[in-house]
Image (cartoon, rainbow, N blue to C red; front, side, top):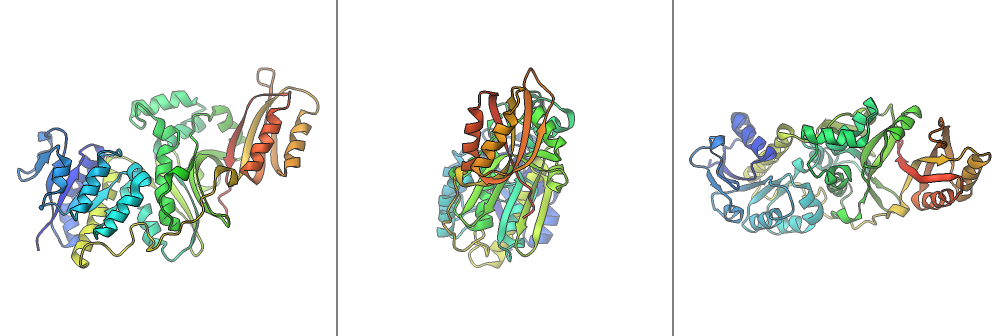
Length: 434
């Protein structure tokens, strides 16, 4: 039986890791698939003699030409970025190639047309490595939980942000100092915007939500808020109230539609996901039959991400062997038919809230604040008055869940009080219990 032939496009951290894994575990992979996997092409901007590739492996910077070659069955795209990855994958699909990709940005923003093209040409796009690195969360949602109706999922799906918040929590450090260390350690890029502003997590949440609820990919409808405004002060106050602050991606099914949101979140300190620290990732899924299940592990790095890439290659090789055309038996986004469910705007979303306001030390200020909240229909769960800071008293309020439009109204009224100084800090709160 002839080997399945691979082209690997991109030999950075992930591509190099996948190449190494395919070589080191070749015998084990062959036992799993019953077929030899042969690397015939690598796409790289410059020749890589350091990799000691067999002479039969062709190296080229012309990626479009590589994916047109007859001796390529599977294209592994690990370059990242939108362009030229979009054009290369589309060309590969048109030439009947199976595709494996770790490119969450590309799938979140252009996946609908790419998956349609793949279906039209009877090939697959496998993308386990696009979300949460070595955690097989896509396989879990598409296959392991296929009998369930998923109610919601919440995930720490960006390791850089989690490292920063962990350091702020455990050592009381300032955001800027920890970010600089994350860059020095290689956890954050020189331009950390995608990580700290939540864009990377929003890309991943887009993909998870599509697989969980059977909806089209809709990155532009994800409410996205970063962690740059989180202070050591808020981390400390939250912990005094029994909560940890984590940067979560949350997708929730409601009677009005689907909530898609990425933002800093207070979660009870006893929750397992509240204790996921450092650069680790975790995804908590609530499903109607099995209940809550938690998936934890390394969300990035050469080994974990390469593990997911090669697992996708193995699945595709099996499909090539056991199906007539290699198009696979599992729908690309987990459902044979997607539903165009309503995606709620941020004003329509419902959460609890942590509010921190700095007030003058005057009689009646707290009464004015609580009166406003009551008038708007917001119930208070806890109030914590902190020691004076620079002639102002920090007041922390936790509320019960309320629709965001009501909270916006209340914050505007409180902000207008003469005794309130500076911007009111708002952090959403989730109990993760239903």
